[in-house]
Length: 147
Length: 147
DNA sequence: TTTCGATGGTTACAAATGAAACCAGTTTGG
DNA sequence: CCAAACTGGTTTCATTTGTAACCATCGAAA
Image (cartoon, rainbow over all chains, first blue to last red; front, side, top):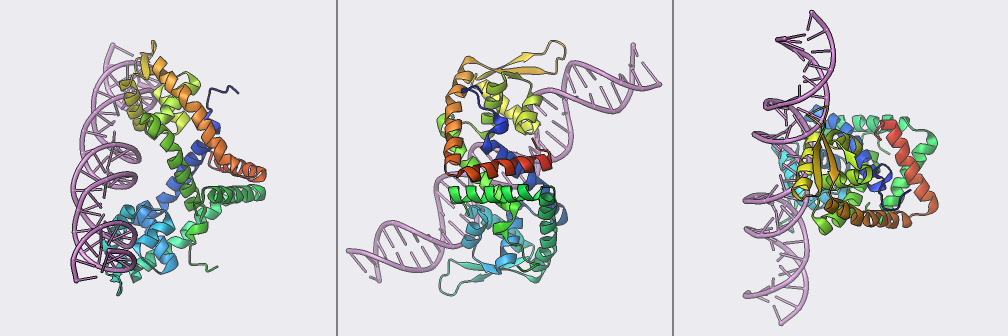
């Protein structure tokens, strides 16, 4: 192990990135092919489907997206009539976002697909490996306080 | 646990992506601030530093980048005079890439920083957590045959 | 109240990306 | 020998992204 050489193959940041990229790319095929959604759009749909009503800021926090990304995704979903904005009564800067019936339908359709995807991914691992990845990810999230 | 709701917070693809994104973003500060490199450029530098001489195709395979990305990164590093191309004698489509003295110097400067970054990241975990993340990532790589 | 700093959200602009078309050059099969 | 079919690598174009500036509104302090 030469000290002045970096083995990319075993460098954790690189491995994590490649792994996440592969998984994310596979998964994105599902919402891309099915509904032509981008990742920010999918996350927005998924956030609102899960929580019901959120503001753009909350959405950004929940799904780790910059507010510009959120803004664009919201605009697109609104254009599709998948969500509506309701002005806040006390603070006119804030809008409360919620899925329309159509948006909810799309969400409900996606949920089983997402769960199946995750299930199939984990099914390829042994029990110990599943425990390892889940605990390992949780530990790193804690260490980086990104969760 | 409602069956028709997806908890983004515990959805593995999302968590992996967010984690990798956070780590990668932190790490990129190092090569961005120090040398103004993009991620593809850093990977190219790092690949050539590790292996010595590679073709663009090999670089793409080693560092999981599309050939267009590789092409652009190589062009930029060449512009900086950090690498040179040498034509292959048998196949005139192929070019062998290698770092110049300046490129190698930059690489040698980056290696300890990269190792320190990874070290500090792992240092925030317990021994068991380190084992878990490394094994978990390895298991997923195997499962997705992305390594 | 007026002013000033923070905050929710949008937008403009530059840079990064992905996909596909493209240009050599090489191999294969007739 | 020649016409596909293929491969290494580049470029073009449309889309996505990040950053920062921006607009409107709000809250606090003078």
